[in-house]
Image 1 (cartoon, rainbow, N blue to C red):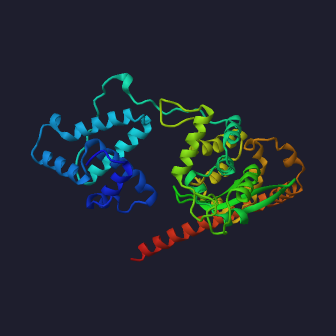
Image 2: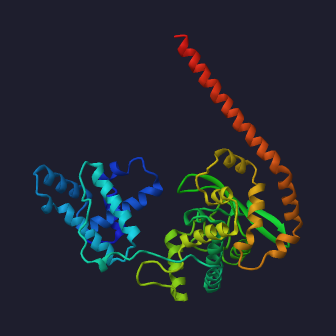
Image 3: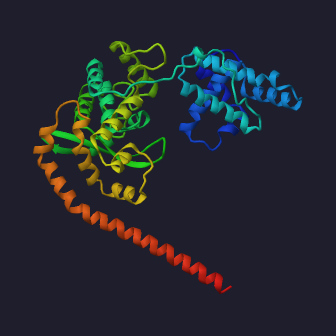
Length: 384
């Protein structure tokens, strides 16, 4: 196998039977990084997966001395390859673990320790400081299209991951718009997070909503409600791709002078926009269970999670209350004077006590049911 384009290598290896067995049962979103890591390894060794397994199996069957095993040399070469490509330490370790899992699937041992050449040659850790509001302002000012500006602010004010933002439809956006007064609208998004399959609700800030509306008016062209909100090109159904979005961010880093030679990424990444949302709301003092819900993380209290999904007013009130930490401009006047906000706040305060009482009743019912089942099982055993 020659050092071909990585995409071609992936297309070749995913047709092999051993690779299909390895990937069986995995989610589609998981298969992609697994194939990428294995393809990288095949490029380094210049061998396909089936050949790699045959060689390692024969060496173990023939009891080749450990210091002469080819698999050890492959992993050392792969580490050097990661270093040459400026992969972060985390990326290198993650891909090495994925490749190891391929061999382990077929009962092949992998080296537990790699020889360290020089201390200075260790892969530079991809350490970046979190983004500030000024960084977001600079990024949106430097972005040349409403689409890129809107994408950045949508992630920064909603906490959605790149893959989930690109899955949004125009219908979701239009149906989720909520007037919060002073001519401002936020957008409620009910979704299932792709990475965790966790159902949750989040909101898009009014500044991002304004940019999305400008994008739809000036750049999106003709569209239908079921089409992707952010399209690859003007007037088409197909969604903007992750590669296209990443390339746009890479060009933006270069334009702003935010590249870094030590790693593949610059100051701006799509993940850092999500981290900005998390950090800002953490600093704001937002209730932890609200933030966890917005982020699409596993809930600590499943009952409250279900309550939020059915009754989103509390989340909406919490989001608006902390909106000033996410928006690029001052929103103090909005949160104080908005009639809709005041009404929502009053409604929440009236319903909060009833909500807590309802949840407590559910917990008591669950506990009572559990005890009844235990008593029933105990009686059945005593009658045997």
